[in-house]
Amino acid sequence: MVIITVGGRGSFFATPDDHALIPPFPAKVVDTTAAGDTFIGSLASQLEIDLSNIRKAMLYASHASSLTIQVAGAQNSIPTREAILNVINQDQMTKTEIEKQKAQAAAYAAKLVPDHIVLGLGSGTTAAYFVKAINQRINDEHLDIQCVATSVGTEKLAEKLGMRMLDVNTIDQVDLTVDGADVVDHQLNGIKGGGAALLFEKLVADMSKQNIWIVDQSKYTDSLAGHILPIEVIPFGGMGVFRYLKENGYQPEFRFKDNGDVLETDSGNYLINIIIPKDADLEKLSIDLKKQTGVVEHGLFLNVCDELIIGGDQIKTIKRSDLK
Image 1: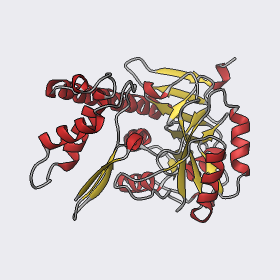
Image 2: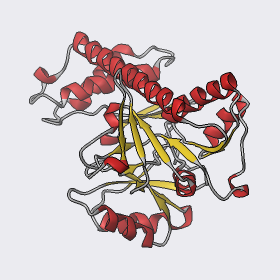
Image 3: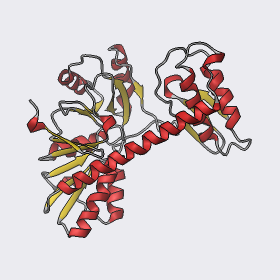
């Protein structure tokens, strides 16, 4: 077996039976001294001899290293077991609250859906909450709603629930699409496509008379600058696009699956992540990216969202029509 640390991408393991890329945990870097030693030591303290808990042990080690790099020095920066478990518990609590907010936003959006429409179903975990919520309304209220999915995963979920699905090629227009977003700014411009259904999401969004986005509070931000933007490229021309992005300072990285394999979108293409530069002109960036041969689509959704619903105990809604 082998375990490799890969910097900002986290760590990778491979055994005869399994392999995966374990994500890093966000941290403000002060000093990377002892980060590797902390990773190895904390991993060794947790790993079972038969490797049965390798994923859990590597997550523990990643948390430990994330604490180490936030403190200057070597030995003094290595965290105690208590400190590591504390940050793991905090991370789990944060994730639980985020999931709660996603479900709250989805439930609120489901109540807004009118009867007798063609409904676009978004992709991702937040959209999955919506699919279940609107399916409950359809069954309880006997609504006449036909649906179009924006991803293979969503289509499978909807079909499993027994929802009435349409082939997107058989219709000219979608009345309403409800979808999640990776991040949304105060002008309701957003980034989408992190779930590998970028092209399908944009096609359905463009067909829709109205687009509602549902997000948790962590997704709402002042600016899209500094955030990851996915770009869908054809495999044949992927490296050419990658070189263009690198030469222009966009810090490109190919997207990988959790097991370390190259990620393929629902349409069989690759994704390249870039970082949106500070003070970027989003309209110009959108146009420039689409001009590059090999680029199928990008994750900038500008002037698409008509209403944003932010989950929480107090739901917040923002309509484009109300923006100055």
